[in-house]
Image (cartoon, rainbow, N blue to C red; front, side, top):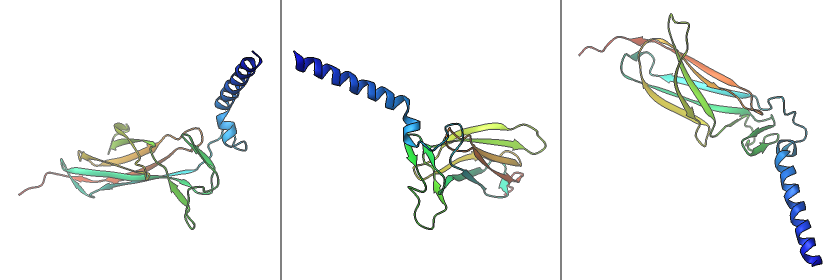
Length: 165
């Protein structure tokens, strides 16, 4: 009888410890990190090609999302402290599986149009192809997260008329 109570008590204690650890996981991951402040400074590079582009022909929109190596940050369930994943002489580490919003603003328009939302690859790169419609500015936006600062990249592309044969 005593063993049963002891086992039940240990199970309850373990369950309680699990709940506490789960509730406090961001604090346990890095006690020195202020949960209200973004930790990692990010950089989003964007390149849209070809330039100039022919109207109706495909544009390739690609880029990469990185975080500064000397910053502490939390990315999903991964806590990174002072360059855990950076190789020597590397200043930036690419961020995998992050959401990037692609927007377009035609010349002489004050409005950004939502084109697509993509995710970075396991190596931090993203890309898509869309038909060229008009000259304007392309913008890729990483909205940030609790421990990663937001960033964006822009690229202006001139679109020229139909190709004649």
